[in-house]
Amino acid sequence: MQDLDKKQQKKRKFNSKKFTCFLSFFVGILLLCGASLAILYAGGWLKSFTCSVVLEDSFVWNKVGCKKDEDTGTFDQGSNIINMNLPDEITSTEELVTQIIEQASPAVVTISVDTLTFDIEEGFIDQEDGIGSGFIVDSEGLIITNQHVVSDTDAEYSVVLPGEEEAISVEKIYRDNTNDIAILKIDKSGLSALKLGDSDELSRGNLAIAIGNPFGDLEGTATVGYITGLNRDVSASSGFYGSTTYYEGVIQTDAAINPGNSGGPLLNSSGEVIGINFATTNGADNISFAIPINTVKSRLEVFEREGRFPQPYIGISYTQRTIFLKENIVTGAIIIEVEDSGPADEAGLERGDIIIEADGKDMSEYDLSTIIQSLEIGSILDVVVWRSGENENFKIIVGDKGE
Image 1 (tube, helix red, strand yellow):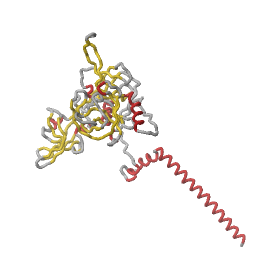
Image 2 (tube, helix red, strand yellow; image 1 turned 180 degrees about the vertical axis):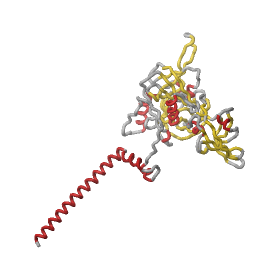
Image 3 (cartoon, helix red, strand yellow; image 1 turned 135 degrees about the horizontal axis):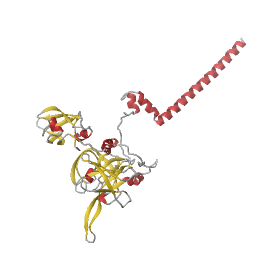
Image 4 (cartoon, helix red, strand yellow; image 1 turned 45 degrees about the horizontal axis):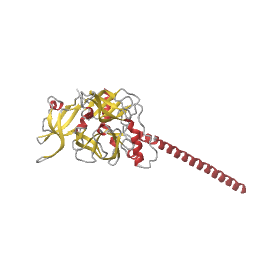
C-alpha cells in the first residue's frame, strides 16, 4: 500500500515537472512570437503582408491603414537630390526654417533675360537682367520655372546659380502655356536638385517656405508663412508687368511672394517642394499663390516620356461658375467661344452651352481645365451639356494645342 502511494507521488511530481516544462516552453514561444511580431511591425513588413492578403476597402484594410498601390510612373530626378539633414529633435520652428532655407537655397536659381542697353561711354552693351526664379529638379541641368517668366519666344534667357556671377545660357525651353510651367535646360551637370513633395497631402495651417529672387536681384530671399487655402480658382497678376491670368486649383499662402519670386519653390516642413510660386494679388496683403507640385510632376512625367509638352485641349473659351436662371440653378463651364473646326466644334458644342459634367465628374466639384489636362491626346471626353433647359450628351476627341 505504501509502495502504491510512493508511485502515485512520483507520478504526480513527474506530471508537475512535465506541466512546468510545457508551460515554460509555451510562454517562451509566446514571447518569441511577440518579439518577432514587434520586429515585423516596426519594419513595416507585417502591415505590408496584411495589406497583401486582405480585400481592398475591407474592415481590416481600413483599420490597418492600407493604401492602394498605384503605378504613377513618377519622374526620375536622377542623382544629387537634396536630402534634408534635419535634426531628430527640433527645438523651435526658427531652427527648422533656418536649416531648410540653408540646405535648399543652393538649388534655387535666378532666371535672367539678355537685354541691349546704351551706355554713354561704352555705347550699346548686352547685360542680363534678373526677371524671375527657378529651381533645379535634375542634376543634369533641368530647371523648373513659370511659363510667364520666359514667355517671350524671341528673347535669350540665362540662369545664374546661387553664389555665382557668371550666367549660364539656356539651351532649350519647353513651355506648357496651359499650366504656366516651363522646363529650362542648361549645359551643367552635378547640380543639387530639390526633392518634389506631395501637394495632395497639404492641409490649411501647414508650414510654407518660399525662396526666390524678388525684383530680380535680391538673391536667396526667403519668406515664411502657412498654407491658408487649397484648390483656389483665381485671376491673379504675375511677373513684373502685372498681366492677369486665370488659374484653377492652386495653393494659397500668406508667405510673401513678390515680382521676381515667380518660378521659385514653395517648401514644406520637410524641405520638399509642394508648389511653384507664381503670383500675388493687387490691393491685398498676405495673399499669394502657388501651382501645386503634383500638377508639375504629372507634366514632368509626360515630358520625360515624350520629350515635349503635349497640351490636351478641346477648343473652347469658358468661365466656370454658378448661374441663377429663372427656373434653374446651373453650375458648370459656360462656353464663351468655340474655336472653328476645333474638337468641341466638331463634336457639336455651341457658344452659350454650359458643360455641367465632364469625364463623369460634376462641374460643381471639379475644374474643367484639370480634367482636360489629365486626358491623353486622341482620347474621348464625354460631356453633359445644359442647353435650352435640357441636358445633352456629347463626345469630344481631345486635341493637342501644341501642334
